[in-house]
Length: 65
Image (cartoon, rainbow, N blue to C red; front, side, top):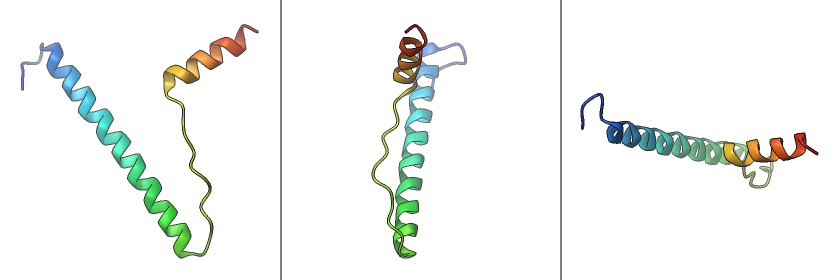
């Protein structure tokens, strides 16, 4: 690892954190679907969430219409 002032170390840490968050959300969704299936309930279809850039762009476009 680099020093505290190393921007590359900050970027690496941010990438690792983002990957961990995404992995956790995917696993939680899979576990929830399995729980619903065990209860005999049908899980909803796959829901894809837009990343923040797409959400912000869409919000900006609709705001200026």
